[in-house]
Length: 549
Image: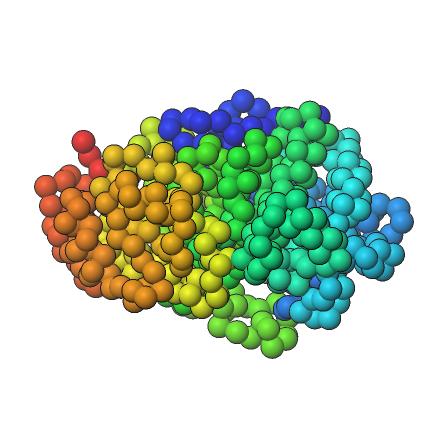
C-alpha cells in the first residue's frame, strides 16, 4: 500500500498531508538521474521529491526536438518497469524517508499512434502525427495503462514512499496540444460539430478555442477521477494547467481552468514561474496562473522553480537549446532568483519544487546552504497561521483571450504583469468567476480585459476598478501605484520594488538602493533572509522580514 495523502485546509491555506501529517511543501525534481543531487537535497532536509516517468520514449517537445528523456514503459507490447523501479529506487536510497509523487507522462507510444491514425492531430510542429486529446479511444487506452502502472507501484518495494501522481501529457508535458493549436484532429472536429448542433452557438474562432480548452480540462478531470478510483481515493492527483497569464493566446488550450477548479478529483495544479524577459533582476517573476483562485478553491498550487544558475548548461547541441532562456547567469543573479522564487511561495502559502532540469544546476555550496535555509523556513511555517494581506485584486476572464488576437491578449494579460509587479504592494490574481471571493479586504481591483465580457462587467460594476484594455495596456507602474494609493492601499515603497506580504512576513526585491526606514516606517521588522549593510536594502537584492506585532 502506498503512502496515503490528501489536501487539507491547515492553518489557513491548502496543504499537502501524507499519512495524516502536513508536509513542508518544497520538493526536488530532475530529468537527469545521472546528474541528480538527491543526496545533497536530502542532506538539506528535503524529503519530498518528484520523478519523471514515461509511458512512451517519444519526445516531450515537438517544437524543440528534445531526444527521449527516459525509457517508455509501454514502448513494447509488454510493459517494462525497469526504469521506473530504478529511478524511484535511486531516490529512496538517497533518502529512505522520502515521499515521491511521480510526474507520469502518459503520452502514448509510437506503435499506438501508428495503429490509430484517425485518433491523431492533423499536424504537429515537427510534422510527426501525435495523439489528439479528443480521442475517446486514446483516453480508454491511457486508463488501461494507468491501471497497470498504479498496480505495479502498489506492489513495489518503494510503495510506501509514493504519495501521489502528477498526470502529464502533450507538448512539454503541460497539456498543450502536440500541434500547439489546442489539439485539432478528426475526433475534435467530430465533437465540435456535434457541440455546435446541440448548443446552437455560432461557429467562430472564439467558440472553437473555448470548446477545445474544455476538452483538455475535462480530460484532465476524467483521468484524475480514474486515478482516484484505482487508488481508492488515498492519493493526491494533479496536473499542469491554467496558464491564463502566460499562454494567453487562444490556441494554448489553457482557457478552462474553472472546470478543473470545480473538480473534486484534482488536488493540485502546477506551472513554472513566468519566463518573462528571461527573469532579470529588478522585476517580479510572476505567476502564470490566477493563483488566488486556486488557493480559494482549496487546491494546492506547486510552482515549478526551474531557476537557472551559473551551472546551467543546455543538454543538447541543437539550435533550440542555444537560446538565452536555456542559460543561467552569474551566481549572484541565481541566488537572488532563488530567494525570490522561494519567498513568493512562502508568503502566499503554496508549494513548489526546485526543477534541476538537466541536473547539477544547484550543485554548489552557496546554493545548497541557501536551499537548506529555505527548507527550514518552510518546515517552521507549517504551524504558522496563514493570513493574507494583499489589498489589491487582479481579475482576468480566462475565456476573453479566445476572442481576440494573440497580440492583444499578450499585451493585456502577459506584459501588464511587469508593471503590476513593481507597484510596491502585494496583489492577488483571480478568475472573474470568483467575484464572491474578492471581499472588502481588497481596496483596489485591476481588471485585465482583452475584451470586456459579462463576467468582467459584473466585477467593474461592483468594485473600485482600474480596467486595462488593448487601448491603454501601456499603463505605467506609476499610474497603477497612484490608483492604488488613492484607493487606500498600503504601499510599502513609493518607488518601483517587488513586494510580497502577508500578515506575518514581508519580502522586498529592490530596483534601487532603498533605506530600510523607507519600507519599515512605523512597522517593526526582523530580517530573516538577506544581507543588509548600514541600513540599506541594496539594488537588485531580496530581503525577507518577519513583521512583529
